[in-house]
Length: 455
Image (cartoon, rainbow, N blue to C red):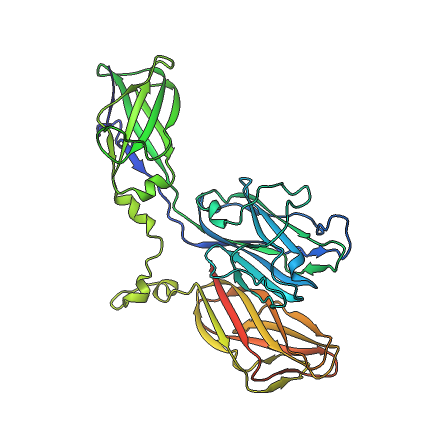
């Protein structure tokens, strides 16, 4: 009769794990990957495809499972926002249609859209409702398959369908114009992929196969099944699909393999592995007893974020990193109305009420900002950039073609090498060309989000 026995500690096996051992790696840190290639949307095209059509981001070194992710399309300019279609294709071939026929019919000037399954709203779709920079759920109103070589239907709008999948590999974004005979545009900032890793559910299993008390030698197949109870019961089913491993040239009965039952490992409170052995292969599986318990302790790693520093002081402790003692992932600042002011200098000047003091971890900071204003003379251009301390982000220039008309403009900028500690944030402006200043009054507003990407 076949039997699976646990390894006894001895001089020979002291370095080996016993029965089943977890090798989880908790990953909660966001990782960002970008392709800043400018994407042109031609004004007239037989198919409406952008140039280049299909821009890719290669992801490597990321956790093996996605907990959540966002996609940001940066600095979009287009006469008709509702013409834009964007299809995301993941390394595993999953196809997510981020936007199609949405965002109303408004003119886009330097806007940035971030798509997240956790966003509270979709892009506006009512006629004449302006679209502004922000974070939205995928928004699809119309449209069939995108032109080849983009993959065909079906598409999903549920970004969570990628949760738990492996993000490492090539991601591709296809941009097309739904009405290619109309006006065109350009996506000046390319796109950004932000990934938060989930726990790695793989673990290592080791043991000894024996027949009549003697370790087997040769080949064997072993089928592993995961259950929520230590004993078989009528009508029970495994928590995940069983997995069969093939072992060749087994010596002294020793087997070692990697198992992965996915979310079943993370979601169950009590777990047991049942093994069935076929030796030699083809002779039929024999189920072994008893089932072996998996210790629940490693599952505590599922609590990826505890926010302890927000609820308890670090008094009495030394050597606590600033990013732990005062966590900072993202913050935003907003002004709903301005005191009337004008900015006409040909050098950078801080926009009133945009200064905020904040503690940053060392690393990069992604800034998304939106401001409304006007000029009293047509053909005036302004340049705006964010700043953290003495470090400046890339500038964005806007043209006002109409005098006296309030416009909402926005931009995205990545600030590198931000030091750890307290820094002041600013948004600065200069008059790039034209006869008049950039002006704000109590009709106008400002909003900025600073997303820290620690080293």
